[in-house]
Length: 319
Image (tube, rainbow, N blue to C red; front, top):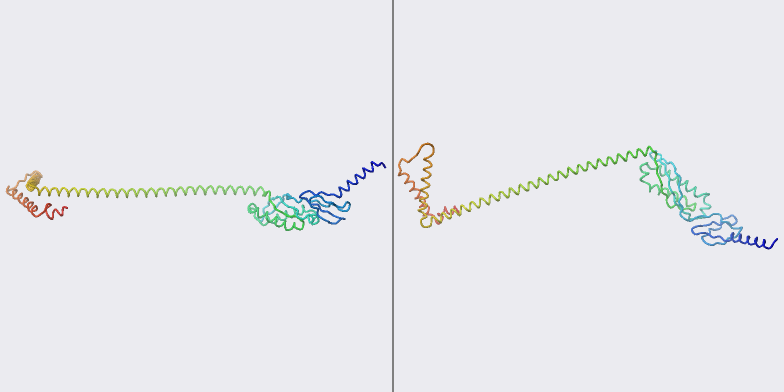
């Protein structure tokens, strides 16, 4: 055999031995090493030396978070309504040894358990509640899966429902119900608006009536005060006039003027009485007229003598 061929063969053998001996584990990965058919170790990321033809990399696992789509399935709600549900499951391998030997296929095991748990949770809820209790459903599925997946070396992080699809008839009924609810809210809002309008109008009318009554009350008060002021002014004027008359009487020639004024008023009054009707009335004795005038003048003189500047008590009463 040619020496060159031998060298090539030896080089290939050496390379094969190196490849079998040196193993490089990427970051966020784990390799399960078997030695003579039995589990030996879990290789961490980095460079590792193994025994060729004795050791074997049996399983390779990714330690990253893995999204797993759960196939769509038909679930029956508590009120016997069919509901098509699908979701996404997020998990992570925490124990590569258990993930390799705990189950033949942890992906299928997780998927089947997620579907079974979801059917059980949906069956406890009514149709309307399934749309409202998504968080409860997700939490229930994660709790059940995480407890069972511990033996598979898998940590279930979360489960999210992608879609809940009821039958077309149910969708139509739900749409009709929503439309009715919206129309009901619209009618209630309109009635509340009319009610508030009536309340505002009543409040406005009440306020206007109060303001009107207050105005009328103030006007009446102002009128009464004006009339009282007028009466006081007239009384003051009369008092001042009487006082001036009294002072005039006490002055020189005042009494003679009073006597003349009384005589004129007596004659005028008698003349007006005589002209009443078609009959002319004259005194039977003209001396009676002079005696009456004299009597009136005597009364005036006595009043002036008995009174002070305003006629004694009469002046006091006039004040």
